[in-house]
Length: 253
Image (cartoon, rainbow, N blue to C red; front, side, top):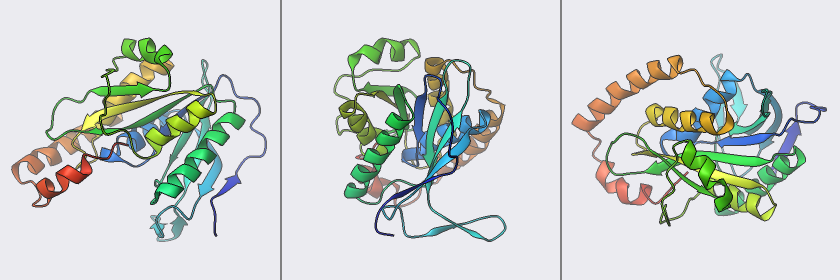
């Protein structure tokens, strides 16, 4: 396979109702991935497109029954009363800059073909010390800022100062170029563990923005487990923690 391919899993999905796209792929603290996966599962989103690319890592995943699956990302659709939700979720981001551009072009074209009216990408905002998570936002237009602020999103001038790398940032640029309003919601995190507590905060903010009440029972159980790991991490941080900090804080996504 020399180029990215998309596989339609459902031939006719009909016309979607004012669709909004939610994007959550692996990144800092897995903030976006965990949040989007959780919401997609809660809304019983149906897969409609598989995306397979040579820009993903050259490996397969192992299933519970010891069979294998190729790495892929998926487009899934969930029906809700207010808006249908189009999810971009999956296993990985591109391993190369060229791949990021190619894939974001494909993702944004899919959004246009499905009639998506707005895109929300979810990601992590690396910080050096553990603290209560906050949600930082940027957007393709200032018109959306008031809506974000009402949901608890902080708009900080010129932040993130280093920009936003990866799909959660670059997809905004493609959306802007193609006439789709888009915003990125970033939860503050150290990024050295799967930060479910931060994902919960991002989910709550997203829920307010798109008008969906998201149950938290399963999230709270996982947060308790992760907090135990975080406490041990603070007492006995890995030796490589400080040496990796400077490089890792340059990545947002």
